[in-house]
Length: 205
Image 1 (cartoon, rainbow, N blue to C red):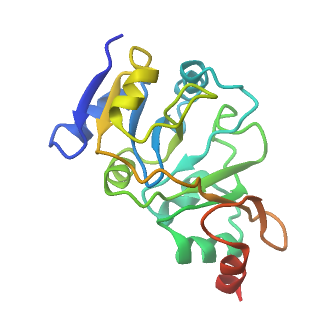
Image 2: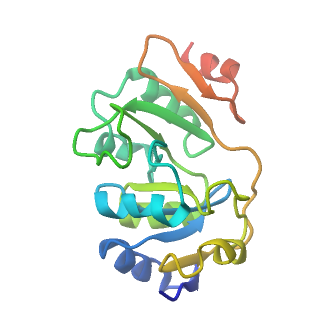
């Protein structure tokens, strides 16, 4: 297939991305860390294709990105009060919350009973997510290779493998999000990142 690149801020960007996503395709776009590639979160076959495109191990769960904290209940069930408070304090931003997943969410997103969820702090990403709804998204690279911070870097790795790249310029790159398990009585950091345990505990105090 031929991979199309569109300016993320052009009037055609969101309608074209929605066409691709709704037909089961994949779209790469900028986030507040690196470029991500994703599908509609509830399209199981499309989510499975992310693994194929990236040469990614099927055992690795894929995070879900949302346009806003008010969409959390679309992908999670019995959301802990702790998770809601952290979402209110740190979203949009570099914090991924692990919460009980909705049963309807495909196993390709997560084979476990939980899902990692985040609202990215990037205008192009949020514009797409607000239009498309929840998306299963991971870094737009071949597994084991460098995570891309520019559209050209995505094309170099995934060109011919995905339908569309939204070019939003260079992303900040840097540290991946902090991942916090919110399914127990206390927050547990599964991956250290920009938001510290101290900040998390302060937000919950």
